[in-house]
Picture (tube, rainbow, N blue to C red):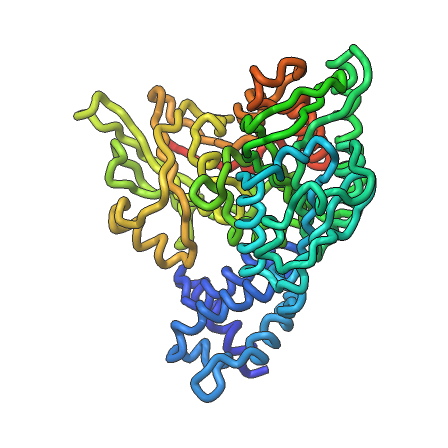
Amino acid sequence: MKKIITFLSLSLLFLLFGCKSDFDVFEEKASQLSKSENSISHEEFLELKDFISDFSGDRTFKQFFSNGNIDDNLLNSYLENKGYKIEKEATSAKNVAVNVYIENSGSMNGYINGNTQFKSAIQDMLVLLKYQYDEKNINLFFINSQIHPTNIDTDLAGFASALNAKSFKVGATASSNLNNVFRQVLEKTSKDTISILISDCIYSIKGNRTEDLLSDQKSLTKDAFLTKSKQNLNLITTIVKLNSRFKGNYWDKNEKATFLNNEHRPYYISIIGSEKAMNYFNSKIVFSKKEVEGYENKLVLSATDYSKEIYYSVVNAKTDLGRFKTSRDFSDKNSVKGIEDISADSRSGDKFSFSVAIDASKLPLEEDYITNPKNYSIGEGDFIILKIKKFNNEDLLSSSSTRISKSGNIPTHCITFSAASKKYGDLAFSLKKQMPKWVGETSTEDDTDIKSISNKTFGFKYLIEGISEAYQTVSPSKNHFELKIKINP
């Protein structure tokens, strides 16, 4: 009781004098980490421990130390008394089950004929999974009309090289229905399970009304994901496009076979899991040209609006033009959300620009998406985005650098806005949820001459639209986030 009274007294003093102590920063950090269901994962608990370790000599943190070391029980009890739910390591993001499903219908045979990039990519991924997750929780399956255990008796690292025409033939491999495949995978996806589907993602249709039939398939895809959404798992879906040599028959929309002799064909790795599990996965399993052979592009689909979870603050960057003052009404020791008394830079033709630091670490998006100005929109204010770059404290003036350091937050990016006119009104900007250009470029509605378009996938954009529309139905927000800056010229 005495400690609680002391803590409340200290908090009141800090409030009265407008100061923010290291302990206040610790409490804010705990609050930020527990945004999801007021729950703190094992990894987040370790992050708090790491923060506290710097203050072993501070009397306000001594309540967490025993014999000079942080006592997990003391910290755990404190956080639970504050209303936080502490997850044990056994249920943390790294200890989920990872189920890998390889579609083994006839259309996939060409990817396993010889030493292909398909095999190399699978091997690279399985090696990374083995390193990041408990191997006993990684399960391999073939999937067609049903899910089947693989018949390959080898360890994870050697699985891909053992793929051949004989080992691949398990279950009804003549053909498969893509939507049925996704339904089976979704049914097996839970809070503690990540599902990874490896497939060519080609819709099978019968009939001449190609566009109508593909629209029907898109609706079934949307229905599969909407049905799963009723379980309130807040799923995230990552679609990775890769390419590989392909030697075998390709069946077009009319079920006519064309033999491709080592042509390069696209295929896809779809990763589906809960937000917490996927955030951990995406931070540890990197898909890029450097890491995975045959990598081309990546797309992340989510229903989450991260507006309330994004830390952001106006900062004074050394390259900004003009001057402004911090608005006291919309700023604090932690961040600057408002500016006033703006003066343009006369030496550069009366131009004015300012920068906003953001922490995008919780966004399950690739770097190229976050740093592309075309993915942003200005909802309010006569500004344009001049540039988006990785955050570097050395790019800031000392006042902003000090404020950021004391806030306890670590921004990931810095966005520079330039005024398009002297109408310095409030700024609202957002990162849009939109289809990247490569999705449309990958898709085709006519694959009858596949040799001339071997880099395209029949009906692919309909698949992505179906998944995307399902997420948009669950959450009407069209943005990953929307942030606002009050501006009083």
